[in-house]
Amino acid sequence: MLTITLLGTGSPLPDPNRAGPATLVQGAGESYLVDAGRGVLMRLAGAGVAPSQLDAVLLTHLHSDHFTDLNDVITTRWIGTFEPTPLRIIGPPGTAGVVDAIMASLGPDVAYRIAHHDDLDYEPPVEVTEVESGVIDLPGATTITVAPTDHRPVEPSIGFRFDVDGASAVTAGDTVPCAGLDRLCAGAQALVHTAIRKDIIADLPIQRIVDVLDYHSSVEEAAQTAARAGMETLVLTHYVPAFAVGEGDDWRDLAGAHFDGTVVVGDDLHQVEIAPAS
Image 1 (cartoon, rainbow, N blue to C red):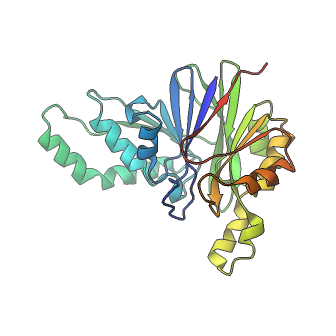
Image 2: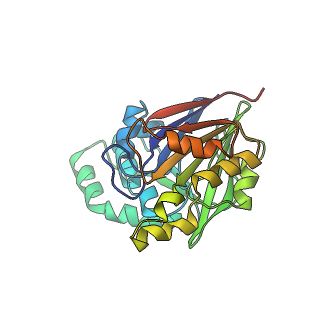
């Protein structure tokens, strides 16, 4: 069984009801955080998961809205554990440099806490792995596979596939339809995909917003990706423009015109369970 929790269904646009992009994937007693947008620790708390319980943080790409609260995850895990426990951070090439910069920004805070707590005599331990494709070398029962996606000019960007105990799910991140994502989805049961309403955005009088059309999937394109792979469940997230909490039937209908499986359009902390394939 895999449990998917939509921790943050928002976008770069601040929303009082939606945290930034973040998804929790759990199975076989393991917990993986995909992206770490604004408010991620509050949503993790809402899901009953502490940073110390995370087996890894996986970044789909290095747009700021997808990792803006990674510093909070690093710090809170460090001060909330009582022996050095490295936080595994996995992302595309460039991730190590971003984490180095985050660690540098935390320098004064780290020094203050070490000076204040006699039992805290080490800096936050992190282990960074940069990947573009293949199976990630991690302990545990979950197999995590990576493939490139297409969010150009944000490059590289990646998606993740989780397989455990016969259940499988893919987290796509920001991307247009592409061969790498299709490879990840082949034979999997569920797809968590960011999506935007291109039909609405195209008519907006703000060019900077209209610019997002060429490197995100529409609701229809996300549904078509799931349909090509013969998947059972499509979970939409990262809504642009966001709708009111509890709404989104029009998004579901748009996806349903292209995908015969279950379409999930959830708010923050919505959970989806993926049973083993029959």
